[in-house]
Amino acid sequence: MRDRVVVAVAGGDPVPSHVVATLPSDAHVIAADSGLHVALALGLTVDLVVGDMDSVDPRTLGRARAAGVDVEEHPSAKDHTDLALALDAAVAHGADRVVVVGGHGGRLDHLLANALLLASPVYAGVEVIGRMGDATVHVVRSSTRLAGAPGELVSLLPVHGPVRGVTTEGLLYPLHGEDLPPGASRGVSNEFAQPEARVDVTGGVLLAVQPGALGTHLRSDTRGADPQGQTGQRLGDDEGDTP
Image 1 (cartoon, rainbow, N blue to C red):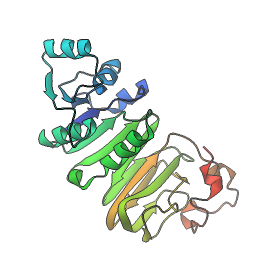
Image 2 (image 1 turned 180 degrees about the horizontal axis):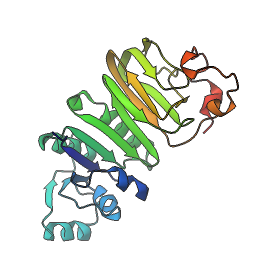
Image 3 (image 1 turned 120 degrees about the vertical axis):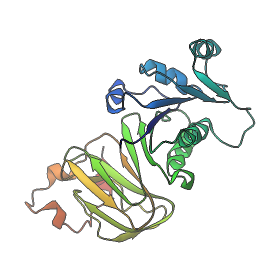
């Protein structure tokens, strides 16, 4: 049985056109306020628009209504962001997997709030993936497989508390059942050693962030050893921060 996938499109900076090819063609599409503009620019067929409608162009919204798109308007004085409302609508639609598109750029507080929202315990029952510009964000609650080119950067960031028993396969600097406290930089700027990697945790939530850039360690590693045999002592050091 196929997963029920919902694409939630947020406002913000334009989304690279190649992202469309990664989205299921039969996904239910929910736009969060001005995410309607982003969705239309990507050629997506929108099924629902949610939010307080303070940033979407009224004429664009009117055309969407006329075309039969459902619109769920909320008061501007509300307790949830437009993206949170879109994620709530995705869960209500019965989603097994939610792909959040956009939500990057612009205000730093919005970007941070959007990234943290993906890992909210409210959405623990669904798989959540973010496509924010060139970056891909996976929420890891138990076990997740990641695809990437050897040398591509990936950072493992603990959120909403400590993460227990982090174990990785396929990364240049592996972790072996390690605990990462909130704010830990140990998981920053790891690299793919193989085209596929796996991240397992026994407790807590990680954001696995692939910024869409290559690191420098795999290319400069001339030791000839199996990357899976490394201790990971350089993981998250200053060299690895080079995009």
